[in-house]
Image 1: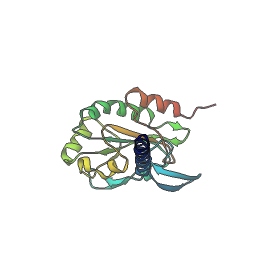
Image 2: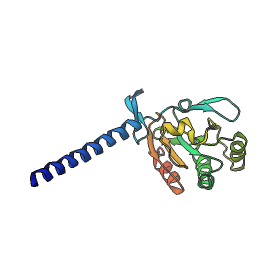
Image 3: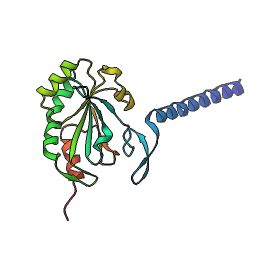
Image 4: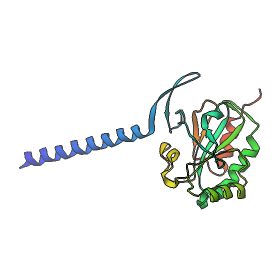
Length: 195
């Protein structure tokens, strides 16, 4: 009987270990999208710090397609938000203040700072009204107007908002989830210091 209990126990441990390893591998597949060439070599495209940020290309409120890659050379905050999200709207003044303070600054890996706002709205009028009311004065606002079924949100693994990713001039993610004073502190640390 001890032998049977031992074999059954061993079998259960093997199944649990295999299941854990398999789930871990599947999570890595979700995050890593492939290898992409950069100016200084190659990088993994994904959403972890150190990864090349995946491309986002969607329409602004006027119907014009805007691409994240068009901002190469700048520090960019990819900001996922929505007009109906209370925490997002309360965070917007911090993002606006950072934009005003750093938009013309030089960074170690980028010149100037801007925001690439990605809305999870599904109502264009409410989206536009929130941009105006919150004074989101940068020009890069995109949405596919599919709410929680947003393609960019799925690509970035967004499960809740607000969430953001800070990328350098090469499109490499250098920080994420910067709220309140953390955004200002991070940008200040990344400024190019005159020696």
